[in-house]
Length: 487
Image (cartoon, rainbow, N blue to C red; front, side, top):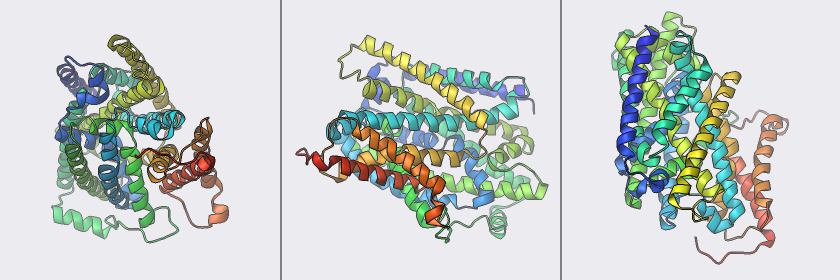
């Protein structure tokens, strides 16, 4: 298929996004950017969060995992779903009661300024690494299958992509991305359904025959009963639940959209709707992955992992289905970064720079916000090029490792604030504890086999990291006494 034809659809898609951005950002102000004026429609937020959560990682990596892990990823998805109950009934009521714009302001009011800035710092690090890993995955696919054939260098592709994201987010922020992410989720899910139907058609399978084929090849196996394995079912479910709590409930990007809904009840509806859709969609992606591997075995395809789906979609399916696939993959591209850059900008402006605390006027705040937005776009460029140099083959594994190291301190900070009545002393001891915990976890990752034997630590590294942070904060608070405030 002509790369120029595929590229033309990329351009048309982006022009459509710019129109939506222009329409939704009219009369936008700083409150529109940071919190969507607190009047976002909960249904739109729920649909948009599907695209933000799944992105290119789900679109490409989840089907790619089936070859090695079968449907084992669904263990983590079950954990995700359980974790959303904690987000809905513990964290959201707290955020609404305190009327937060930045969720890390809770740490300021509960544990002090150092904890507040530490939490914001770890969020920024987490989101920069996580979002750029997701972006790299999709940009690299577009590069390999379209833009390399047009002679466009990878750094140019990345720069133009980030410029496009900057253009449609710099003014409206959350107010805009609630609409654009919803639109992109619809395109992504449409592409998924079309690709499943046509892969089955290519294999001459009915749905029942497809299920039988996956079962006979062992791909439908979900639960791993080996307690020593890093993918043991209990580890995966518990780890998945804590990933949801940390990467959704303690993440400014995800919560920024939720608390832009006017009422707590509607925000909770959003969480339940989104989480249910997420479970179903992940199951469909795993089903698609099984089909792709059956097809690969039949046609002796060498591609596997993240490269298998685009190989089949662009080289074995009808032209119009390939176009739908490209639209779907682009639809996962922008939610990977638009909300992330917006949330990082918000957190840096509100939490690190303290624009609201300084009482800046609307014009000065906007000028600073735009400068920060542009600066982080450049940081994204550098990180994506870095991922290209490393050339990771399974980005979903990279993301889970990043989450384990960077969200653990956030989990420990919020857990300490919510579960104890203890104060933290002034000074930078809190930051020291939050930096030390991931280092200890990394050492355990490197040398744990010496005392753990065959037992492997998987995604529960996040829980261990959080517990180490919690324990360190407890020891630090030994002489700081108890609090009188009720949170």
